[in-house]
Image 1 (tube, rainbow, N blue to C red):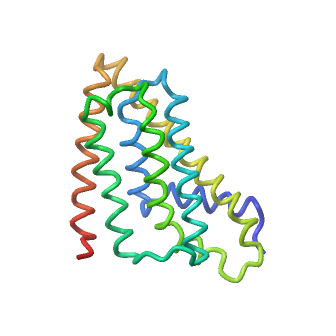
Image 2 (cartoon, rainbow, N blue to C red):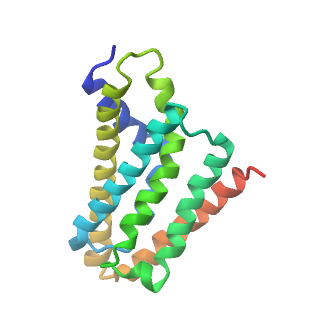
Length: 191
């Protein structure tokens, strides 16, 4: 039987690994339109993303929801691609627009299905399936918040020290995210 701290560490390490590049990219693209002073909106969006993926992580790992892994591996980068495109619209660039929070929650549902296989293997044979879920998701959330802090720091350096506008940052990050996500979509084309 694993401990709370073990599952917390595993959730954290799962996000902070190169295998989670799609997850990291989604979080960075999601927050590309925000200025540092709007950090609370970023935290809200990332938290809704966590709630969404926690729900489907559980349902997928319990076999309540079954979707072909190949389709999920295609849909995950598609969420990045669509978020990057949305960032380039007038509505997507509005930092007061609450739709970003809901988009994060809905797209979190898709990402959670990708996590469910990993989580299922992680707790295989452990009688504390539900007790592991909280620390695992907390570890994921802590890793995401660290990503947010690092990205906000980079954004601050970009905008203040280099005297650049947030619009330029958004174009750069969303464009790069779109390109990488497009490659991932093509690599994971399930049809």
